[in-house]
Length: 333
Image (cartoon, rainbow, N blue to C red; front, side, top):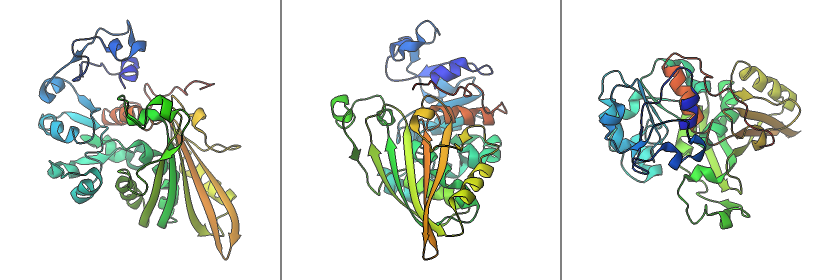
């Protein structure tokens, strides 16, 4: 986020608040920023951090943001983009169920617009508070959104999502430690991941009916990237060719979503970028039904995190949505 804000032609990064590296230059935590900025990490109250700015971007952990944000929200006219899960859900009961504690400020949930531009672009433009989606949620929602809008998404959807280690944050844990992660695949939180309720809320808002997600996340020996694979059944009239046409039309005007023509989505093609790839594969028809697979690839730190937050910031400020985000990422990755 910091790197792309420093590159942004229309905004100025004024300060970075943190409880780590206080008083040290940003390059202490982010070596590529050596010599690129004179900013240092500051230990600031929320109000002090937000003083005199147009927009605040929260990159705090779940459960921490909910405690800090009200002080900022009280400042007149200030806009907020939050990357945590604390304000993504409309239901305080769902928050308590999936995040393991009561929401401390449920009265603010209704004030936030869910920040998936492909779903809520116009609402985001007119919002004051935006909650950026989770990384798994972004990939899965983009893969199923065209079906929801076409009235084709209902009932149970089975999903597997594979993610890189950077999704776990900067602090090493037993399951993200390199000697364990580098040669391993491991399922975790099966059927109980915290992104499930936001995905079902978003897809229902897009036209899905009685959507139930059966989601199994998998940690992979990657640093960055997500590949989600969703399985469902459709009437046999929905051939692979017809579905591909639906997806190409659905994303034809989207600046950051690609529907590859000659291959399926892959992580290496989007790594380091704000782009997402979405693809479709369909099986043979049987008894009037056809099994369909929807595949999406994103970079969990960019389109699944900081990049999408900046995309939302651009919309909030009335700027070109693609500013500081148009690069395609490296190849080879």
